[in-house]
Length: 233
Image 1: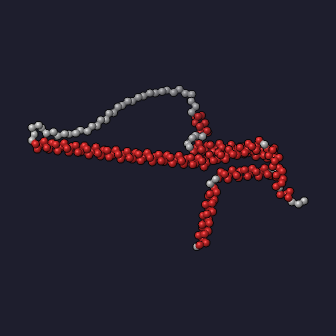
Image 2: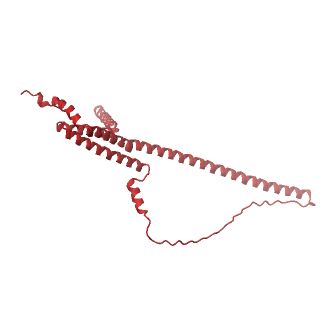
Image 3: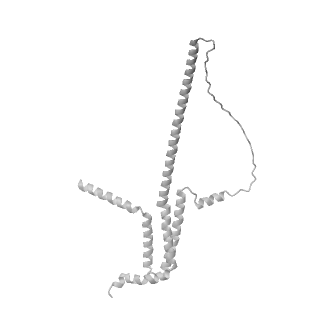
């Protein structure tokens, strides 16, 4: 049981290390492409043509990767790509036809009016004291009902306002989280890929500009590092 648990922990640690190494995947892609280009130049014995063609390849690859990274970032933020924009622009070409404009109107007005009617029971002037007291009691009952209705309306409006504020706060938090997710995705996908492509482009321009000088500088070093030169005659 102890050996099994130790083996399981070793596998988990190895998996964690591999996941950690896969995080900068565009960096490893950058290194692999440069290593492949350097190995190709080495096989060509550091010739001028090898440097020139490798530089052209890096320029083409870097430019393509930069454009793809920009397209990916634009698509991530919901922006139309140039191809979609061009297709939409072509489809919006005005047609050669006569358009008849028909107009029709319909106007209606609806007025809703609501009012609260308060039934006040007033006692006649020649009524007895008991009648006046009963009328006052009725008026107090109506007033209490109106106050209770107004209080309930206020509580309802307060609940609606709290719900609206909470809903607005949740929407704002969701929008901020969405923007943060978009920025993280753009940083880890399109922008980093475009950066790698830009570096490839710069290296390709440099190599293609001075291929003869690089060939002269690297050829003696390649001859020195050639293992066949170290073998005894």
